[in-house]
Image (spheres, each protein chain N blue to C red):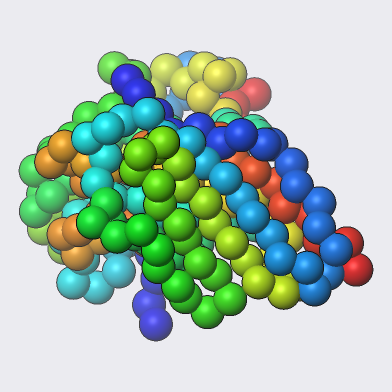
Length: 111
Length: 112
């Protein structure tokens, strides 16, 4: 069965650079969630989209923005990167209920 | 905001034994609970879920128990296998939001 696809798998950036993470949800899933997971930490909710509209907002910094496109894929844009942004970024999708299916994540390292 | 938390950060069990991973939640408005398994370098993988109108739900080798009176959730894994070694997270949602709030993970190590 198709799963949530995230790209890139790994990303290395310098401080103050920008990064774009992409997420392709499971086919026919209309809701996308972004989570950030620091080393040894639990995933922290950043933001979610339903039918291309922002549906919920968590602890997402103002330097970050995200959107969902007409094909339901989503992109997380991160600017003015800081060392503390180094983490695993997960995307999850659902078909309208609370059961989220997660991708394999993007490991972002800010040097 | 309130979040779900776990009692123990690590758990070691002998292969073949049963494992019990506990979780305490504080949000009385939570009505949906879910367990995820996360292996190193991978995303959280769905194990089992339960709604607040149920006390128990069984899957293949896994059982989730919900005690709403004391706001406690547990995951039982029968006949634990080496492949069960991973970090286990509980998460909850409720009050009209489908956003999941994760608790601190428990690392399960299976001793061959």
